[in-house]
Image (tube, rainbow, N blue to C red):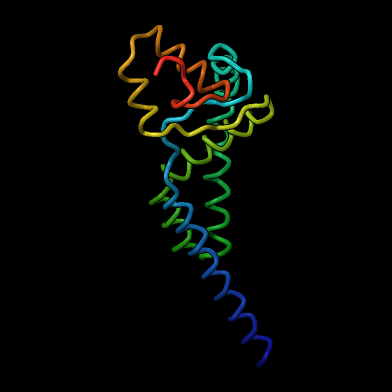
Length: 150
């Protein structure tokens, strides 16, 4: 009798863990406007890195969704786990795609740098030449405050 009780407790705790993991995965907000950052890099280098890494996004999204379905079945059962994953599949896929691109960019020495609201507004209000200069500055490690063209 003790063994069956411990099994029930184990499966119950797995269900709680699944619910927590899936809840967090479904609630993860997608990254906002960002640029690849690397000391001394410029817009051309960042654009080339993003272009070469964009091919990994679909596979990364598929892998995360597949893993979520498998985890859903294992931890939440045949009905509840997959239902929850299906209802959040779009967010899960987008997050997996972003993670895959971030990993690829990291292999090239870049990290994601989220832009502040002020930086986004500054970029929107500039002509193409000034926008490119500000992006070069932000990608290379600068900030809006240290930009010579604020």
